[in-house]
Length: 559
Image (cartoon, rainbow, N blue to C red; front, side, top):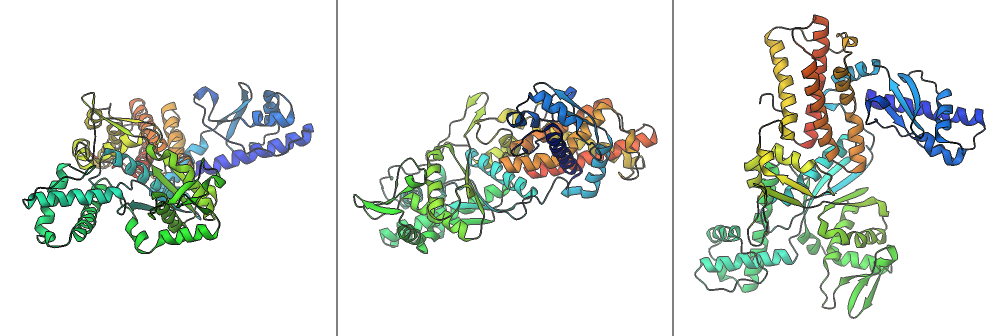
């Protein structure tokens, strides 16, 4: 556990003990002492940490929160907490001001832990399946898929840093209607290239990439039309989706995203998993027949209405395949399932929660993150996208225009449930206005200073050797405090499923460094102070590498 988290735990314990002592001394009746939550105040004048625990106690104690806070402070033992002053603020907040000594321990902690700084084992026994992107295998990755990839991959990194055992999974929907229409579209283009006149399938995929794919298919399988029509259609569907999956894998790998499992829907059908889940739910008495169809009594589990599992023509619905797929996930040993879906699937959440419970798993073992759409802007105008018509910006084109680092960072700047306007011009710009450039430049500047120190044969002491107490300025303290926040930022981002917190943290850390650089000279100072500041620089570089690594963004040494 990091110095910062250990200190937070000590302070929380000290405050809890103070509440117990105050309750005994004052005769308070408290049914249950609430967990003491600490936060960093927005205003520096309010101290280093603050808690609203006094306001939480007011209902039980039946006193004004300010009076409760004053009493808690009187009973507070600050031994080993680095608390220099505790005071009451506003309606009853307890503000804490800490001494600097713990900050020097942070620098030693960063040096000792290196690339593991900020990582923890808090959730080490939780095995999580994170499914994301899962775009239909009917075309190249586009910018909407790219945002899902960046968010899902970064969330997986964050949760792993917090101690979760995470598996990344991509669900290949290669047995549904879209895959069928894609196969028919490919076959139609193949026949056109063979000189036949064909009627293009309604709702098919007329995009140019389908015709190019048909050219490849003609070269690889010149005798396709010698097969029966049924065989032609089945072959095109399988060959086409397989080829698209390989391209999607390559697109994602170039974006720095690699999945542990690519799960095929067709395997569910081949192994009769849909039939098995229907049999399971029937035996559990959660299915019934009506109007020739088989219905799932999902309303028993909070869904707004019951859902059809098998239509009157005997064909299973999409829901049946999804239920079978999630059942398979649990049977593979995962404790918790997280799906990242688009906004058009919001209404699907209730029925899946119902299915999870009907299968015998806790409702809270399954969660869905709804990812809002991306509006891509070029020269201030919206870029319209349509996969079927072939009018879309592919992930490959995006990376060619703005690069992997900018693309990943821009997708991560906003909360997943917030709509994102992606400014292509800003993302490609190499200036301080571009947030990812601003952050990477902080890392490159540190590397430049450290290179100069090495060239000048300047001695760089270790954190244990350096006289860190010489670091006293406001800019130095602010920078170290920001370094100290990373472990807590990672834990909160993991618990709240909010990767944008780490993106914001990186920008704040870069800002703190740039402020330090403006106010504090490093090389050429008194040798002891120079050594202490070099330790601070090395720690900042290390934390930038850890945080940007979690985002999947590189840390260039020269810019």
